[in-house]
Image (cartoon, rainbow, N blue to C red):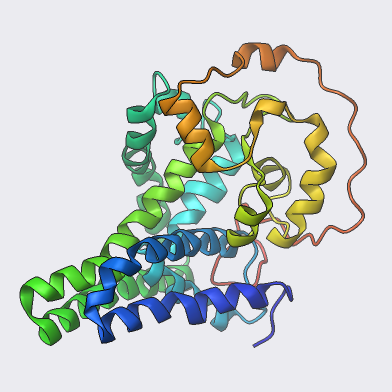
Length: 321
């Protein structure tokens, strides 16, 4: 089981130990399931982050292990991992919230606000559905191995959750069983994909997609980023999408001086409270766009660059498809 990056040892602790531990504990002791829900939501969000990371820089060198790991993550994410390729890697990373991005925040939301932010994930999912179906049809017609992976991941989600729900009903009856499944797996799985799209909205709404430095909002709290595998450093992720997540703190440190200060937030929660409840005003994006870009600082010496992810197959070992 050879990892491509040693830092993914921590990834596997989350994926192989923490992700299944809470559902097992909940099924063994149903009365704790509602109390564990906040932690289950955090782990579901982490499943989304790890799914995203795996789609950019596959964890293992062996294709079969990547295939199995993709299906495993799909179950806890509540969505087949292959959907990241047509919607995120081939769409969002190519067009970066610009006019051709199917998930463009300014296209799907006319005015930023709490209801716009909460409703964006549903609108984004609908806008991306056609790209997903085109990807599936193309795989079925031209890429048999890729299509088998699509079926594998989809079956893992559908059959896995159907089995888990059935087990809860069989063990504890309809009422307790439904509550147990909902708290242990159902609600977290529904939340994970929604939360990924909600986060994408916060990372780009009000930013200047045409700017070299101000196209993304970053959440830079170190403890938060440790818990979320440095997912808050979004600017450098777009600039180095195939680079392993462990390199993002160094890349961000070199880049931060060029990013507009209002796009360097501490935490997602703090930003949401201030933006949507305290109604703090941000600088006009057009003013940000007109700000002259300073000279580029040198890149940090250590960059664990992987091959380009834009067309990578998550079942493979990182080579372009």
